[in-house]
Image (cartoon, rainbow over all chains, first blue to last red; front, side, top):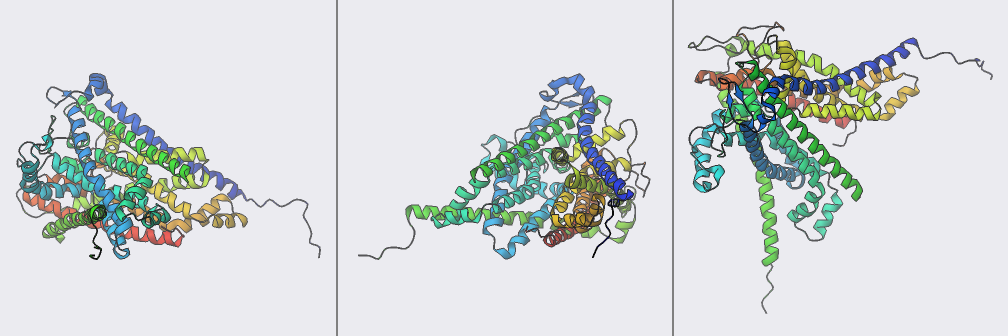
Length: 322
Length: 292
């Protein structure tokens, strides 16, 4: 059977297809360019908005104290200290708890309740920060002032961070630390769980077969295998704690000055920005607020890149080790 | 000769105790997280249910000293903000994801992903300040500016979740479509997107749930709002998160109670959306053959 063979194949690519490919490509590329543009313009606009304050105070802004709209004199050291104290405090509490939860969900929990508890922990992450802050002022704050504060002052008062009067009021750096801990535990613990689940079973079973207890297996195999990722998860949690504005503003009390006692009120970079939303007295104050945001932006970039670097090194090690 | 004792002593005993202690700590940590969730949600339910009424949902605030009143203006305002933000962020986010998975050369692909990661890591208060310097300085606050800020928060979430779903679409579906002579854009619109649409929708819903609870981006963009119901996008509108923020610090206990009720409304909305979409996401992942 002879089919007639055309000398030239007919043109099957229709006009619509030729245009459509280019159009979709251009459209999606434009969207991607927009995403990159947003990131660039965040850095640009924030530094531009901070410029009057940058010119007036220079980098001295970072190492001086005080925030005075009357004399138009602003500086960030108080808030940098408050940010460091509250976020490191929160990470110190959250890191062991998150690792514990990650281990419970990956190694210990019976199959039936594993998923349930995992979703409950994730639900904690879905609670809006303003609701957590509301709970922080009206429920947690009074509890801290009446019970937790006095307990810590009685038993650990010799440590400088627990010095001072714990009963003044419920707002303060301790309440802020606790609220931040609650916010970052779900994030770090779900990353930890994923990491721990990624440890090959034969390594774990090998350790058990050699006579290790479950804890020794976790310490020497699971944590060794995942330590880079765990550090990255904690750094991500730290970044989240540093950047949280709303819940901290609600519970920290909003005060300038460097207060080493966790019972004292204070302020962080993010919470100082948030507390100024009702308006600024002068253009310089607006610029100073934006300057605080610029500091926060730089810190958040550093922590995010730091975490990614750790993850990269960790992946490299793992590939190299196999 | 006495029978050898089977209870562990010395070193073995210490090892066993350390193991017990570690297991107990780990279990307690998990229980503590669940207990905190129960405490927070329980407080909101118990204290919020008192002030919750039909009037609370449909009336606007009363003047100081009167009792009653509601948060209708905040509910309408929040709905307006979220719908506008979703209308901006979801299409752009999906397009970015399509570009990254279907078109981009690997070098550009990496830098777009990096940009999304960076954007995701920027604190929401800084995004609020960014939109403030971009749109508010020299002008006045508006619902439009607030929704732009929310959209910037949502964009990396939508783009990333869409990307993950698109990656799960099996390569042989694309190849089959190409083999049938379909062009790339027809393949993307006719095969890839329909396969992934469930996962994309649930990812977008999660982003909406996240944006609905955000307060920080709204502080500098749409916080000085009237107490009447308004849908004018050129003017500032009230919102549920900001209402909670303001009422929580009010000295009036009646307003504190309203803050709890507003938190009840917000938390129900957010938890229903995020739990529902998480379940749907798990299902669509399984359908696409992802073992997770």
